[in-house]
Length: 290
Image 1 (spheres, helix red, strand yellow):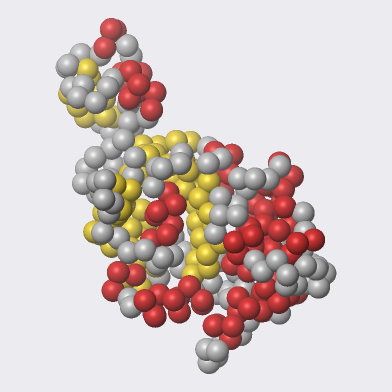
Image 2 (cartoon, rainbow, N blue to C red):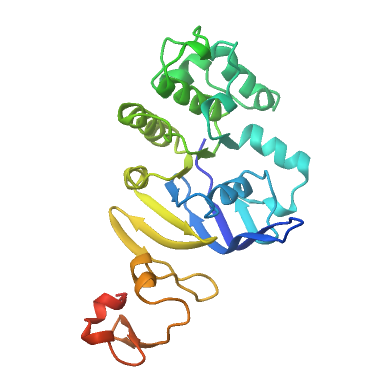
């Protein structure tokens, strides 16, 4: 299975509540190439889990467009989206136990995850033991979920997520309750799945080290794409509506409502406070993009 491309265009999501609506996403633009691994990084309440739920088709955007492969998820019926989640989109929920039947063997957990895809003509699925080997659990097919250590349990959840050979795998906080060794084992399993199958992988995480390990990390802040990290270097991102979120250290020094002029010359953009660098600061201190 080759990886699926993902595209979000000016995605807005609003939770309706009696005490007042809550805007979880506010104009998200994001493109993910087929076979890419990406981390969505941000604090609780930033909107990253909402974005993944939209990519999984578990919710529909209030506005904007969410595409996975050739599918516009907003135009699909509930039945069509359910079929995608059983075949082309794999979802691993936060907390390994939510993805597994504790009384069943690992082999049976994987077989149950393959049932929908197995009914489709022409689909060839890997043997459960092969899938377990892919995530570093070779030979453990007869084991019960309840007998596994936390790190192994999380890798079993990943095995269930890739059981139907999806082109897109969405994983919510897979390392949040693991020690360093368990975290590294889970990340190694994700890297193996990506390398051997070309699966597009999106991981929600609080851990910046996880983002660095995956190679590309997108920060979600206040419902928008705030910054992007690639191979250890951070970038600000211009959204589709022309807005750009400044780094937190800049926002801390210059609160909302502060006026800047923008100077653009020979590939350098400089923000000048009131038309002049603040207190003699070098322009780089005010957020210079080259």
